[in-house]
Amino acid sequence: MPVIRLLIVLFAIGVAAPMVVNAQPPQPAQEEFVPVDQLPPEAELPAARMVIGAYVFVWVAFVAYIFTLVKRVKKVEGDLAMLERDRR
Amino acid sequence: MFAVAPVLVHRAPYESTMGLVQKIFYFHVPGAILMLLIAMMAGVTSAIFLFKKKPWADHWSIAAAEQVVLFGAMTLVTGPLWGRKAWGVYWDWDARQTSALLLWMTFTAYLLLRRYGGPGSDKLAAGVALFGMANAPFVYVSVNYWRTLHPKTTVIPNLVPPMAGPMWFCLAAFAVMAIVLFTLRVQLEEQRAKVEALYLAADES
Image (cartoon, rainbow over all chains, first blue to last red; front, side):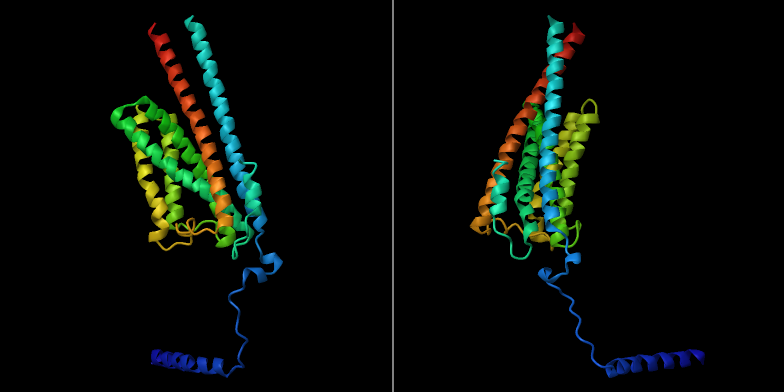
């Protein structure tokens, strides 16, 4: 019969627990949503860092691509000049 | 144009809920639009190369594929930086982000094939570009069919004029840059074709 006793104890706890919780003085309602403009400064992500990071990446990507393009053009022009010299 | 764009972006009004971080929009959206348009173009020129065997179409395809990877990288980096502040996460694996990443990876695969694929890789890569082209419309409409954190396509037509002006200006600046880089890249490919022809002629003689 230990199983039946265990079930009775669990049932008693299940019934008693809400009553005990309800008997406690009401807690102040927890604010789950905090508007962004009311966040403490340490909890805020710096937007400026994100914006500057994004813009810097775009510029760096353009400059890096132009750099590789110019490098490749120079190499091909060099090859072309060399081959034409050899043909003559 | 690239010197004026940051001034216009700085003067544009702040979005009411996101604030400063929304200004990433002015570089993120033009990059994304160009990525999709150029991916479509790469697919069309690859189809012309596959079925009509026109060498110019191959030159256009490889130039376009590089641009897709360039503008795709800009979109895929600036988007998560914006998302981290606006949504709380850099990446959410939603339909728009995942399909855009897939598009970028498809064209990266195209370039890797062209670089390391050996003889015949031009035709194989053209087939890959067709898959990339097929993915582009899906990337665009994905936000309208799946529930996602990403804003829908209705945002751009409904922009208020003080925000729409800088956005269209930035798009024009990006488009001009894309045309210039594309023209240079096509010329490079034409010169490479000349070099290859000269090498072949030298070998035969």
